[in-house]
Length: 366
Ligand SMILES: Cc1cc2nc3c(=O)[nH]c(=O)nc-3n(C[C@H](O)[C@H](O)[C@H](O)COP(=O)(O)OP(=O)(O)OC[C@H]3O[C@@H](n4cnc5c(N)ncnc54)[C@H](O)[C@@H]3O)c2cc1C
Ligand code: FES
Image 1 (cartoon, rainbow, N blue to C red):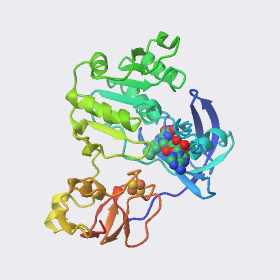
Image 2 (image 1 turned 90 degrees about the horizontal axis):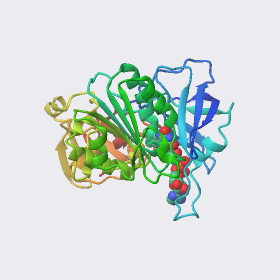
Image 3 (image 1 turned 180 degrees about the vertical axis):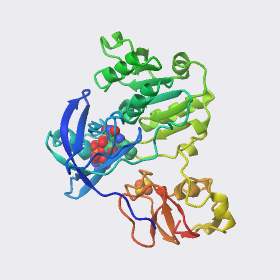
């Protein structure tokens, strides 16, 4: 099995900026004297934060800054409160830490930039960036890159109201300086005076009519990030509008769900396994689900073993689908290759199936 690349490095909080009633940005510089590594627009950092039980708790935050500026990374964190229906629950500890304790000068351990949700800069298609709430963070980093590249781009930010909407001014500035960048906001429940800004084009929910009114007919690359319900609804709308699934990329901030399992299928970024699927099939690589008593050839059509299991009707437990939470940890005989480095390397004989593919034939305890 591969070795994890996650090695922690210290970041110093150099600046804090309040972006909205619920979102604060932290500007981070290297505290070890090293240069910050370049990142792909859309990637995130994992932080090792002190958990409520005293043990370190990993939390991920997308880099919201312009990838051309490597003097600092900016992350932008929404404070997570307990759901209104469950005031007995504690508020989110990671976002609470970032809001209350990550003051200027504080040192936080974090990873190098990572993640597969990245802008395809080789494509010349027009781009739709579709953000729900705090889901704008990876898309904002993409927006800076796209505006500079003069590639036709539409950014639609769906928010409850102006009070909670982050980055309205930054997005408006991109639209003002780039002739190829169009910004629009859809406010679900606009407050008094919220509708006066130029980017306020729509109120209520994002519907097919909203997308039709915003977008000229075209062949778009779509990047989608927001709450789960928003993403499900947007995916259905995009399919109605004829966007091909191969051109929709997305990222979940919370527990991921398999949008492919919905009646309309969703595309994920494709990462090539070390050996191609047909090559593996030629080599007779198989995956056996021991508890289900089934065996299938690995043909490379699935991105990960978790996707593969789901495609064959199994429903393994998962949460992050990102190699972080260990929910998908599974007993495995054989070798796997990690396409995304897990946060911690599993013990021998175990595999995180959400971020791995077979390196040899496998027997999984599923
Ligand atoms: C790739 C990626 C990128 C991300 N980027 C960003 C970003 O740019 N900005 C951002 O703000 N977030 C981002 N996130 C989300 C972020 O990682 C955290 O998940 C988020 O901040 C919530 O973490 P928390 O520790 O504050 O909340 P948690 O402590 O995980 O709590 C979450 C919710 O559960 C409730 N809760 C607490 N205890 C219980 C319990 N016992 N039972 C049930 N419910 C409970 C809390 O009240 C809260 O509402 C990203 C996530 C991923 C995977
Ligand atoms: S689902 Fe979280 S590590 Fe695999």
